[in-house]
Length: 435
Length: 194
Image (cartoon, rainbow over all chains, first blue to last red; front, side):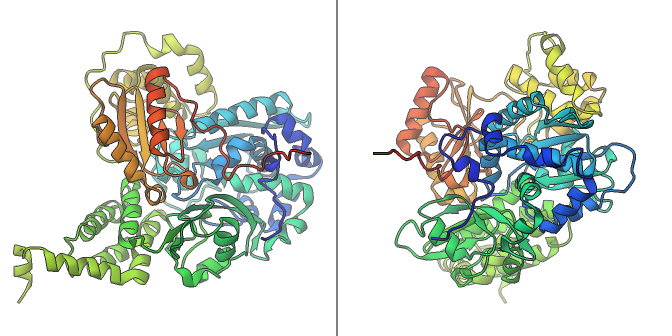
């Protein structure tokens, strides 16, 4: 098995580690904050993060330091930091563990980011279902406030950084950063048209940075151990550091595994997660959450870094790896994900709102063996009219399961349709359709 | 976000206003934001915690507290699945049905509820104790199948475990099988020497 150093899960792997302030400080916690606040100029902190090559862990993989750099220089009004803890991408459950087991690691990252971008207020937007996580964070914030790491005049350096927890209320789309901001403003979570981007017009129309939980949790380590150290881990220069991959589905040992980026799916699935749960071989896997197109056993040696997965026709996304064994009905699997997207479409853009309903209807028909020959064409046509035609990336995501299963397992669709034709009575519309 | 029903008119809340009951909490929540409207979802949660659902009366009161119009409150309240606009059972069983849980047998879990309690998704038992909802991903894919009951997660469900949870809930209102601070796989145990 691969030997490597854990960064984000290291503390919680120690027996008896509770995630309290005391435990966190004992492992060197808040030393990064002490190192920079009032001592190193904020611009230098941003430069350090840029040099580390850290990219967003939420799904899009945008370079964190560059994102911070987009904030307007010399702007005098308030700026905001939002920690995206909306973790809702099916297949992903890493932020939940980071929040509930080591909350101070995230809080230190949040305060470091506040310092770097000059934000005096930070909101942790946590999905509403994480009631326990929200409580743990609130307790940790209170501890950090008492210790002088959060609040006004932190570490007696005259810097203000307040942090609040804000619970969402059950809407996948609020993980999209502009929908998150709308929701935080007390509105329906509908993504905004971009530009303008949150960097200039974000929360309350003020300059805002939105960063994922895991992204922020990396910051204390980058500041403490230097950008060179971080940039040497993983698959440099473009995919640096470790990532927590969430393995689910038909494996022996599902769960969260922190590994350097650049290991292969084979290593992750067979070495870390113990391989397949039964003697059935692997049939398919989703490499990066429900929004990422399915891949096949031929892709097992693809490296888990942003570029390699993109080159294989999918995306590393949120790090949710779902494994399916031989025998899994791929049309059914695509329908399940399509039902998710149908339920979660926010309704703002017509192609996505209406298209998701059509896709679900057509897919249900096929799975129920009532499909028609022309349905496959209809599916592709619908997908092409959704992809790239919506305000946010949800449209591209929702067509991924169908398009990718059609690409690799088209015969399964055709078999279902043939069975439909063989067993069904002739329907009037079929007679009309035949010449 | 679909199939939203109109708020029930049987919102016979006692005439105690949220403001009278929760003045301190409300002030604290509102003080966190530079713009009042941001306090809307937290206040809707407060109303739900108080009454078990978000009533029209509560929405009107919250509108007044945040200087919003009732439709502004209503448009937000109807968007979010966790805000119940009608009463649900004392225990709201929310079984995840997304693909990752389905691979691990979540449809079977929904089947147990059907066989044991005679309710399907969206239905409540006659005694008002249990409501079943089939919900989308709750971020517990590695420990599937799972369900959330009110605030708590129950994971790696088996039929025995499921039976015990439901029995405990009925008897004690809570169950010790709920997940604590999440970690999977678990941390290695401290090595026992000798």
